[in-house]
Length: 374
Image 1 (cartoon, rainbow, N blue to C red):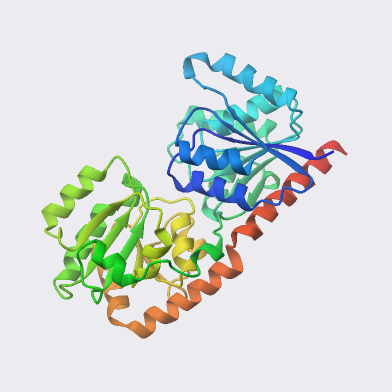
Image 2 (image 1 turned 60 degrees about the vertical axis):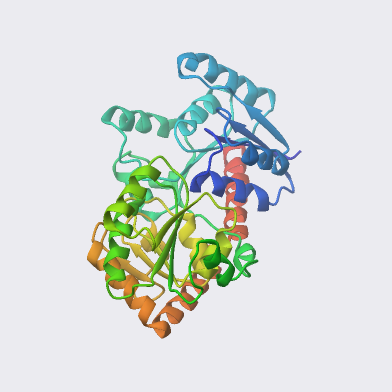
């Protein structure tokens, strides 16, 4: 009989964690398994169609906070009726709704993947997490930083914690479909201009206003420097305004949500991640898979991937001058940029291949189920 697994997520939307769930589903070896995907509520239709294609079944809970007890019972009944063996939850509130429903529905194995640090959690929420440890078999942490927070702040026994980073499909980032000339022409720039690229949601944590400030500083010495920020989010207007204040409207463009991230990354001379908070950014690994020279802040799970001076440059978060100096150094020292880029590609291939990560997850499913049902 196949192992029946349910993947639970709040909503499919354009975020790193959601894309990672889809990517893992796409490459997961489903031999000996039957995989269902459950969403708490409706989201991006394109991503939902992909989930339906990759999974054996798809279920939308229609979750509403005011009907929480009913939703819990409905999910528990679904899990029981489907005879689910493993429930794997991603992101709040699915991580605790799923564990409770899994416990109520008699699911033998209850797993979460911890995508973020969760320092926003109130004292009451932390207490609730400590209670949920009793009905949780494993919390997969995408960075060592997150693992330590779950152990120290939320009291999760270390035997219930596992470090397993995000991964990328290296094959998707080997060869671009469009060259730098075509990318630069799209934005009205010369193909010879140096290009800085960043990829991420336009949210406070990514600190894109600081990147605009840094480009303003670099422009004083490299007038033709260009910067593309690919992504969407609620702070688009604020970031656009900061670009105007700094006076770099001809140098920095907000590219919006893109389906050609590989092409943008391959066109880049330097990839930059100016975040003040991170879990484990998928865009960072994508840039590494393209062999790019990288400047990133020393926060969250970034140091799990980047060792300063070996396969990238790490700077302190919030330091405009340090970020500008590091980017300018890579733009002007081509030998250094190429050396760091080659090392980043090797690191991505050795540690962050998506197929390897998906196989590790599958092995955890079977190992935990065997131990729980022995």
